[in-house]
Amino acid sequence: MEALALERKAEQNRELRERLMQLKKERNAIILAHYYQRDEIQEVADFRGDSFLLAQKAASTDADVIVFCGVHFMGESAKILAPHKTVLVPDERAGCPMADMVNPIGLRELKAKHPNAKVVTYINSSADVKAETDICCTSANAVNVVNSVDADEVIWCPDKNLGHYVQQFTDKKMIIWEGYCNTHDMLTIKDVEEMRAKYPNAEFVVHPECRPEVVEMADFVGSTTGILKHCRESSHQEFIVGTEDGTGYQLRLDSPNKSFHFASKFLVCPNMKVNNLKKVVKALETMQPQIYVPQDVADKARLSLERMLLVK
Image 1 (cartoon, one colour):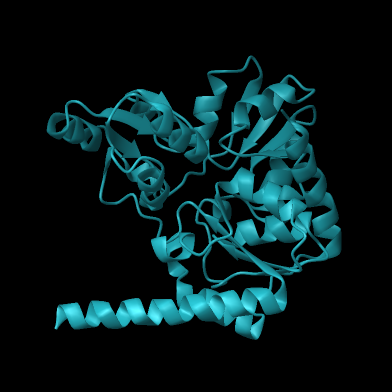
Image 2 (cartoon, one colour):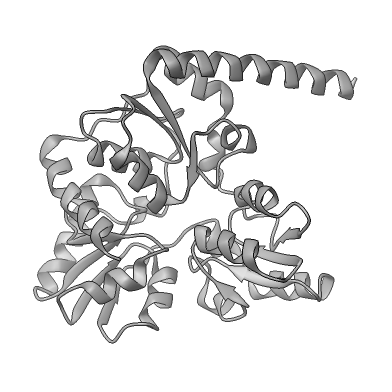
């Protein structure tokens, strides 16, 4: 019975992939997928990446339609950088709790208290917050962005864990917002200790969105792309992975002969996993849900994103 169900699922996926290829051609569409997406979406993506790489791709693509498989703020960033493109998201309910932890009113109040500070905002934020921001960053370029700012004082939002990590690599005073990633913040010292006892030969790699005390335990700290690159190039054959489990798809693709153990069974972002292949196909069939960003907000937010893309 189970084998029959799996066979039916495989046949449905084949049909969906064929329909997707047809729709992409008709719409001149590109599929962008974050590394945290389900395997079935990463398999059909034209481009897989983290927030930074996907933002770059959205800004440079010659496609007419971008289907952004991630969470809502990522679709907003694509629309801001490619205002004349149609940007679709498979499910508009795919939000980001961390992005919701900062709002433009609160940020404006904090700016008023620190008038000489420049605002550096993690790309995991809404368009409205980006519009109140001097420059955005991702986990891949956060240190370089903060150090590039022409100010001695930086307001950092919304991820306090990433902010704490960045603080170690700058002389600037950082005023850190109290937000966090629900998924990464769940990883604990106990989780890591238990996994190290179980896999003593494994190297522990971790994302800086995790708690500072967990990050301190790591053999390697890096963005999603940084982790992928490190594991691909490392001489180690076994890894304990401290980031969202969707990265397993690319890790296994890059290094099929290496072993990867996720540091906790809770390293799953439910918002990222809302999307599926069926919803991607439906989005292109109906050309909905579309991302809209008011022009005045988009114009201000675009500056913060474009400044980010210029930082080397």
